[in-house]
Image (cartoon, rainbow, N blue to C red; front, side, top):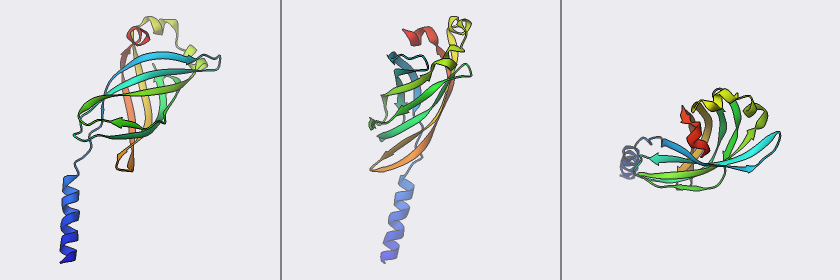
Amino acid sequence: MRLFLLAGTVLVFLYSCKKVQDPVFKQITNIKLIKAGLATSSVGFDVEYFNPNKKGGKLKEAEGDAWIDSVFVGHFRVDTLMNIPGNANFTIPVRMEMDMNSFLKLSLAGFKNEDVTVRVKGVARVGRGGIYKKFPINYEGKQNLVQLMK
């Protein structure tokens, strides 16, 4: 009888777990220079997402690399615990150490062009109830440089 109850409980648990949908990227806002340097500079910005899942969770950490028009611009890291609400928009403050030598490789012609290709690759640890799972961060899309710098 106990085995039957245990098996039934496991089946109910497995069927109640739906596949978690990835958050939907919305935009990058509030870009600001935190610390200027010749070799590296610290830049802060907010990344806005929408969580399509019914339940929320927590972002424990995230890190990765960013490119603008195929030129590596820096490494980012988020190491503060963030609440992610269910079925709602949320904002993640990001700090990136930008390699100024690589960033300067972007020509002035690239900055005159309002739309640039932004590519981000990394990994995030997201979970709920003390159980965290790694999720890949893969984004590539066009961003309006004039809008980003305002």
